[in-house]
Image (cartoon, rainbow, N blue to C red; front, side):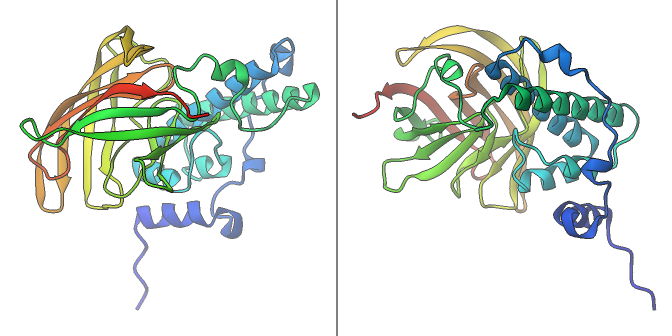
Length: 307
């Protein structure tokens, strides 16, 4: 009796995990990029070249997520942030507009790499001093939030200590215990990794969000495969604000969607406020009858790094 055909998600996952061995998708070198002229970048300095390379790769990942949501989650599991694995993107077998855009992005990325190598620019993922100086946070600083899990509940404190600021991710430590539990976000504000039990929002923010933009993504409880909320949001306010003694360029996003945890499912509403420069969380207000998806958290002070 013939064996049943594996499901599409199973085949996609197998392709992504086994790219280097099985060859079940077109290899990166076999995908023809749409040629870009390196001369366009000839006058750019190393910082600008690095920023554009990061932007190209981030956009490529966004296109891949749009092609197939299930495969996009597999890519996240493989650790895609800014530094992407091009064969994994083409394993989605995009066509039409998406295939054309990915080819253009790959061509631009290769042209940037050529100029970067010719200029002798460093290939480190450390954030340049020029970019670090534009951020409202610095390594060693401790961000303290007021937190409560219900409107009438007692408030407590939740904190993040800035551990490292890199081109692809910002690394924090949660709490005061040593060693601190790792918390990682990309520069847009999406949470790449969080300690078990913590809320993390994924693929919600993109580059250059502006007033009126409509966003979509999901909120998960880290470590719980049954707890997630598919959400949509709209940017309802933007502007500079002084919060905890620091100047932030904030975006206020109204959220709505459905949260589920096991057999429980209910409406989710709320808002999230981030700094558009660093992606740093400023405030989070979520309300839902689904366990784990009711939380209020707001930044109240920034403690300087200890000498």
